[in-house]
Image 1 (cartoon, rainbow, N blue to C red):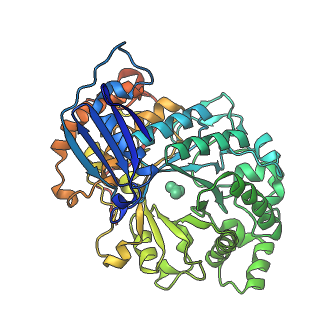
Image 2: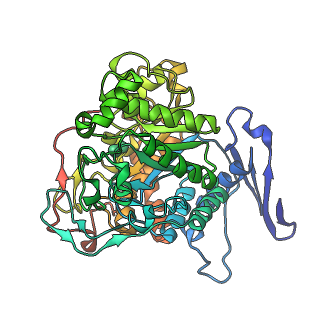
Image 3: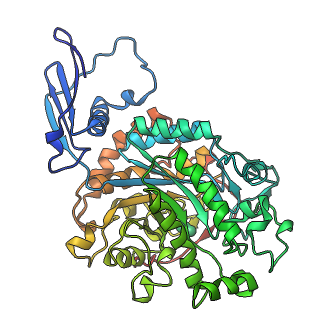
Length: 500
Ligand code: ACM
C-alpha cells in the first residue's frame, strides 16, 4: 500500500517477504529519506511493528488519539532501522476474573500492548471469584458465576471488605470484537479456562461440577476472598462433558492455536475424601491424586489436539511425570507449559520436548510490588523493580541450543486480587511492562551486563509517551498520593527471591 505524494512526501507501506528469510514474519525496515518514509515488513505483522517503530521516532505526540496541533510538521533526520523480535511469544496476562475489566479497558490494553510490540494477550477468564465468558449452552455460568456479593479488600488476611457487589462478563460479541481488534494489531488472544482447581464460580453456578460426595456444593457461592481454594471440580464424566461444551464455544470464538486450561493450584483434599474420585482412579489405573490430575489434563490435551489446537497449562501439568524425573505421561507433543513457579517447570518441559513460555513469579509477576517501603499500594510479593524486570532473561541457563529453542518466549502476568480497576492495573504494569517488552524483543546481553542506565535515559522519553497514551504508571519517585492505599493490608515477602 502507498500513501504518497511525491511533492509533499508520504509513507510507503510494503510487504517484502524476503525481509523475513532469517528473522521471521515480524521483521521490518523503516527508512526515512528526506521527505519520504518507507515501512517494509516481512508480513503485514512486520509492517505493523515497523509502524510502531516509526511512531516512536515521531515522538510522544504521535501517541495521542488525535492531533493536538493543527498543522504539525513532523521532522525526522534520515535514518534506516532494521529490526526483528527475539521471541515469537511476547505476552501479557490480564486476570479479568478476580476483578473484571470492562471491554473498553481490554481494547485499550490491546493498544498498549501493540505500542510495546507485544503480541499475545492471555485472558484469564475464569476463577473462583468470577466467570467472565458468555457460554450459550451453560447460561448460569454468567447468570450466577459472573457476580459476587462482596470482595476482600487487600490480602486475604486483611479484615477489610469492599461491600459492593462486583461482577461482569464478556458477551460473545464482546469477545469477537476483542479478538478482531487484537488481530488488527497482530496480537493473538489466548483464552484461559482454568480447571480443575480455581473453579468455585463454575461450581456455584452448576453444583453438580463439584465433589458432591464430600461437601454440599449447593451451599457454595462465587468466592469473595483470595487464596487457594479447596473446592475443585469432580473428576466425573459430567464434568468432562460440561467443559467439552464450554471449550467447543471457546474454540468458535478464539482462533488462537493455543488454548490455556490452567491446571494450577488444585488441592487434592476433596479427591482424597471422595469415593467417586477413588472409583475413577481405580477404573483408570491411577496410583494417586497427582495422576488423577494428569489424567484430567490429558483428557483436554487430547480433546484440543483432535480439534487442531494446542493445550497450554501452568507448570503443574507436568506433575505425575516430568518434575519427578520421568517423562510427562502422555501429553501430546504440542502441549505447552507456562513456567510460573520459577524456572524448573520450563527446564523440565523443554528437556521433555515441550514448548515453554517463561513467566516465573519471582521475576515477571507484575502484581508484585515494585519498590520496598510502605508507600506501595497493597504491597504483595517480592520487590521487583524496573531494573529487575529489565534484567529478566527468558531462556533458563543450562539448556542445550535445541532445548533453548523450545522457549517460545515469555509473559508478564497481571493478577488482579488487589488491583480493582484499570488505574491499579496501569500502576502495576507500567513502567515495568516497557522493560519486559524490551527483554522479549531485543537480543540483550546477559542480565548483569545490560545497560540499565541507557534504558532509564530512554525511559524519560517513554514516560512522555505513556502520558500521551493516558497510562497511570508508577512515577520513578514513587506513587502519587492517590495511587497509595493506606491501611489496606498486603503481603510483602522479604529477602531475595529464589530464582530457580
Ligand atoms: C498462578 O499464578 N497460579 C499460575
